[in-house]
Image (cartoon, rainbow, N blue to C red; front, top):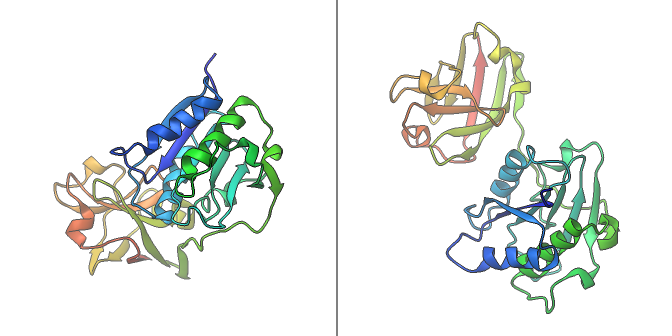
Amino acid sequence: MAGPIVTLTTDYGTADYYVGAMKGAVLEVCPDAEIIDITHDLPTYDILEAAFTLALASSPYPYRTIHVVVVDPAVGTDRRALLVSGDQHYYIAPDNGVLSFIYPKQEKLAVYHITSTHYFRQPVSKTFHGRDVFAPVAGWLAKGVEAAKFGDLIEDYVKLNVPKAQATGEKSWKALVLKIDRFGNVITNLAAEDCPALFAEPTPPFKLTLGGKEITKLVPAYSLGGQGEIFAVLGSSGYLEVAANRNPAAKLLGVNRGVEVLLQLG
């Protein structure tokens, strides 16, 4: 039988010892744990990017997977460490909003402030809570310690003001660029449920405006756009994307995260 799964999501990169030390701290407590790297290449200190990445990557894992995310600009301060029990999974993270995409999706949510220091690796470094706090707590949780043993329930945990697409009229919406992926695809925060009419068949006439340019074509797959053509597509994230076949749409459009996106039907 496979051991408990612990995933790691950080901005540590892989050139230094940090990720290896975190893995060792998990295995020191629970040698049977299976550790999976989601990514360690998040932009440094970018809490919003980490929150979005974790939300998209964590859901397919088996029941009671333990997700550890460490993007922690305030490490060593009085910011709290959290253990979150959700409908399917556990999440261990600093209390800085990095779980903001996770919280709204849970019907049963319990958020614990981790205060039981005897589960920490000693001595606790002021600069490396990933190794000394988050990883060993994940190890003990994987070993079967109940979530409530790690601290008290809280309700005042930090939540980012996550930008959402807004309807500005009967057939118009205002959205933002939420992420640029490594292929240069422009991922907006306009979800399929925000505008189901756009994805009806046949596709209705529409105009998507960003970067001073208008996109009027929606395709079901990246390869169905013309070479270098900029088009819209519903991505695997469930959000509307702007892409170009084998070209970086973000570069072609000259846009970055946070740029306004306007959608008009008809």
